[in-house]
Every structure is written in C-alpha cells, then in structure tokens.
Amino acid sequence: MGDHFFVVTGSPVDSVEIWESNAIILYLTALLPTARRGPVAGDPQWGQYLSWLAWYGNVIEPVIAFGTAELSHPVLDVTFRGVP
Image (cartoon, one colour):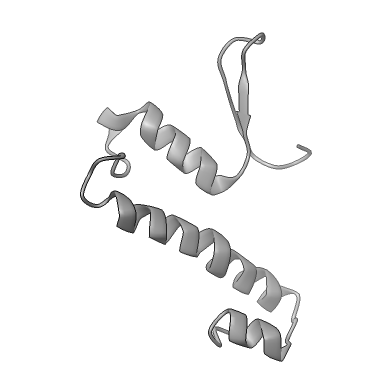
C-alpha cells in the first residue's frame, strides 16, 4: 500500500489489512467497543456516526484535495454543494 497508513491484525497466516481511514475507524470501533471511541452497531447513534464518517471521506477530503490543487470546475461546485 505504499506510504498509506493501514492496520494489520491477526497472525501472519490469517492477517487482515485495512488501509482506508474510515475503514480503520470502523474496524477499531468494532474491535474495541469498551474504548468508547464511537457508537457500535445497534446503538441509536450508529446511523448518524456512519453518516458523519461517510461525509468526511466523500466530501471533506475531496474538497480539501481540490482546494490544495487549486482545481475549480462547475461540476465540482455542484457535486460538493459549492463548498470551497
């Protein structure tokens, strides 16, 4: 996975690699529910938690990347609701 951050769990034989930030967050939240880092499946706030994680990865990260690269296009403006 190059220079990307990822979590490896399990033995060398049955290890699992997880490299997307939202996937790592969800994995650790489920793996360590007593750490209380986020709601777990079945919690009344689970849906809202998933929505915020998805919004971050699907809106905030691209908007930051596009802004850093100084990209501008009407389709991007509409897609990301005009967020600069």
